[in-house]
Length: 327
Ligand SMILES: NCc1[nH]cc(CCC(=O)O)c1CC(=O)O
Image (cartoon, rainbow, N blue to C red; front, side):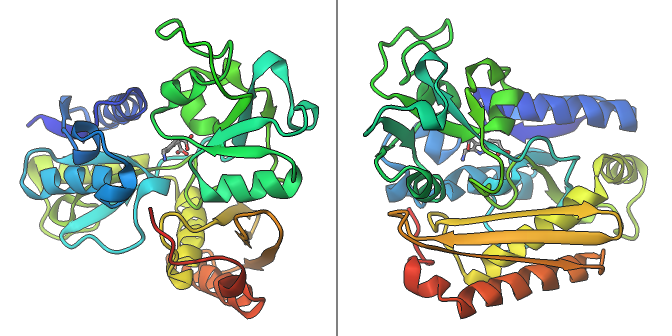
């Protein structure tokens, strides 16, 4: 059997999928191929808001799994809605890479060096809010498009493919995506998590399959059993615990995909730490909470996320931000 990995056709998606394909083939010893799935978000050119947000990318891949057009889908975990997908299981979260957001500015500038009123592009209310909190004078510009398109709006940062003059002083992107498409050269400053908390799940991949093919399902045998074993081998448990806690914050807040919420969890020794923030999009206020647990299980991580979300709500999170905001 050849295992088919369904993927979007963007450079970032193809790179992530190919990496997972190579790892699956190496540990599983079976052939793996990529199958390109056209999503509504790739076909249509209207604004994402009119299509139901980034969820459209995810939905097409999930349909392909359920229709047996592919066996495995690789998602950026931060793009996955927190709700369950019936019939499907996140079978593996591989070891997370850099979680930080990164400033990619013209002329090597760092945040503090940008001139007053500098134009900084991001499509993320979470990034916009934290940028404004750090530098109230910035003109934050709403931008869309893939990573290359965004970099192309900053003078000197377009790859060789594009040669646009650029209309922004800087953009903010996830270090993880830049690393995956080999564009870390564009970064002028990495934001530590005290300046900018990342999106829940940022820097982490989710490898999804049909539940019947997932690790731990009884009766899986033959090629299915081989896939389940290979998926289990790709899973990184500390990453799984961290992203479980982060996503539990979002779920408990009932936060939409455009809610200005950041969360970051990590394991250190026998503890799982979680920090989360809800910001006013204008940067004027925020509430921030931090907690830890020694319950290093999926349940313990989920409870930690719920607890932090409830602390945020008690501190007024719903009053400072539209938590239900979606694009
Ligand atoms: N929403 C787009 C998206 N989804 C995942 C990544 C980067 C990789 C990651 O965070 O895992 C990006 C680009 C970005 O936010 O800069």
